[in-house]
Length: 165
Image (cartoon, rainbow, N blue to C red; front, side):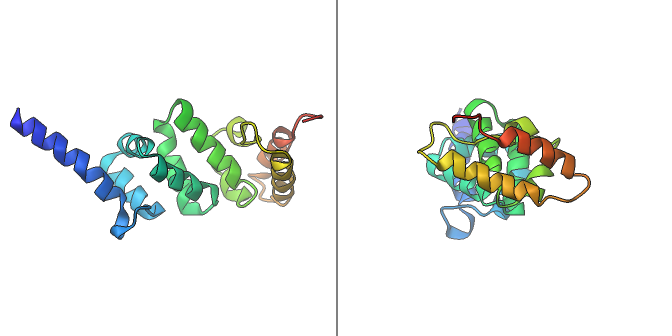
């Protein structure tokens, strides 16, 4: 019994230390990818989920459109459900205007066009969804890669707000 308690205590203490890469309270994308490779995406995702501030920092990283953070999203997505899945989908969708080619390349790799080609807001302030729509459509119009162009065209249709919204 003492042995099991010691193991559980060491695991509980190890996770925050592992996530706090190099003394930082915010893990880097590379540190998270290493942790996912070592401990598994399920464990990392749910440890993050239990720590709101750390999870929010990861979501902000993904929203940046940085390729390393998009890899984190892809690595965590298979282990998400419900609210965590929606958070990842919306974070990737918010990266769309910043990195349309990289985001569209995720379609079929854990993310669907329906999930990320949307207005990623729940009850946004006035003008927020409309500004996102304009930025996303402008970014999508610049996608020229033959493999991504059809996805961009479909995404453009889906990202448009309904008339009167």
